[in-house]
Length: 114
Image (cartoon, rainbow, N blue to C red; front, side):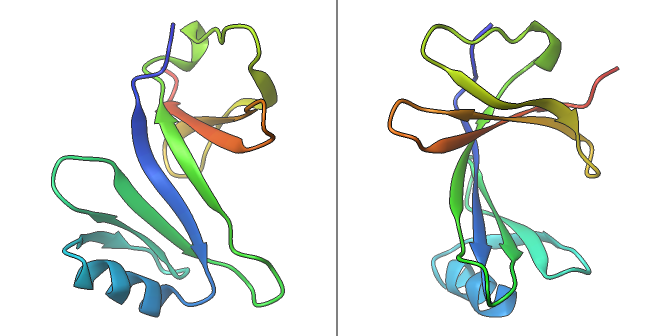
């Protein structure tokens, strides 16, 4: 089973409020905000942007999130290094991390297991 394309862009920031306002100024709408300086924004029916604040001593990262319809049925093809296998998250999905040939990390997100 393959991925279903881009689900989201995950951005880390040093200032949640400024980052959210930046995307809202570009036409994104706030779907929800958490109580720990993060939230999800959308612009139409495309992939969403999830922004999470990180401490000042950490370099903010960006990661593309690919949708996977069924984590248990997912079998990557050759050349895909699995960095972390699918694990349940506290926000109701299952996530894994893979590395591409150039060393970039990609997140895979599937619905929570049954």
